[in-house]
Length: 454
Image (cartoon, rainbow, N blue to C red):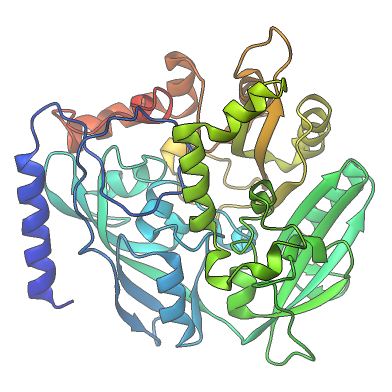
């Protein structure tokens, strides 16, 4: 896209926005989504942002990329790997957009050293709720929006263009899977890896983990390598998360490593039957993708076909518990023990996170800069107790995370009351930003969007 084409795309976006009726909800017309918030069926026509998709340039010397905000990480990674580079954090699902990761939150196995995607932003251009395009950077006139944009979820504006930092890669990644049977020892090991950036005498570039049960936990450490004795393939019949239970060492191409979780949507594809040994060989690889599964789940959420079948069979209703939370590592064992006892979902994803720059403050998702946090991801359903609340498990998770000094990501359903929500997510700072960049309130506010799901 040339500068003239970019300017024309911005003018078209402004014209679309101006044409929307005052008071009408504003949404993006995107073909994919990774949000799990329930919304009313009737939805307003969205803004067409399809023009803002693509990698504009990659500077190998400065290790930066100039990229449009609606570009998916799948396309961004293809472009950067061609130059031996990658974004500092690559969220685990291919159709997450870079704009979405920056206005929301993204965490992956490099987050113990690189933080979240918004920490790699050098500069960005934002289309604000009051219809302006503003250039946002750590310093300058709009530094407040730079700091407050992460965790605003499109309620202050939309990113149309970003410059981000990259890092060098090697062609392959060597993985080491270490099993633990004691939760305290498990998180002591995680803390050691984050501190030393080494495990079993080997340098570590990536770390995450998988919890199958109270006595079966795996710590996965990985490092770049120039060569590999063999390369495993988990994009077809073989399933990555099952390999943790039978291998202690493994090797993947760098691209397959970065997308290792997408093929089976971590492990959530099992609910759709695609992991069945009789079904798996019949499926073309192009269908083994998180966005395909997401569309299938969306169909079920709209039409409730399986829910009606389950009800007719006399089985109890189930509560959807799809959440990612961050807990200080000193309280991680406590969280996991209570969660396993009270909720009981497994497997659980574990990923340590530490802020990349300890001098910066991100006010809408404030973490202690010098503290290591542990992200827990759990995505399943839980049978409702007879006479119990239909959102009992989600509310339990929210209370537990708050009690332990953590934070909950807002990509999924939330149940906080208004006062608690704004106490957790810095309502005072948000209110100032909202008045500055969306004074007429044309965009939903964060509470309405993430809790009331309007």
